[in-house]
View (cartoon, rainbow, N blue to C red):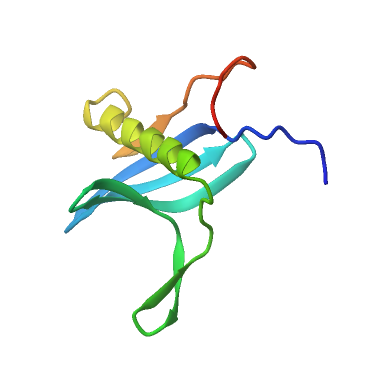
Length: 117
């Protein structure tokens, strides 16, 4: 195993609004400037907003996530970053000439941060 930092942070979110029923939009989420998860959905659920990761249909009406987050702290960090990108885009600060797109980058973390992930 290579020596990679054990902290995973969202370094960029590319968000596109696609409001339909409970769906708010889609995001491409970059982690540590090294891994991109495409097709993360922001959903407005009965208990609030949540992110849904890319999935495929395994059987009729049964879906399996292609990738998933194992810790609640990282899931919350991704959710917070996607919501911030969505809010930035909705306020007009993140919109571009390419349409409903927001390029949100989370501030760089310092070595002294106490993030649990």
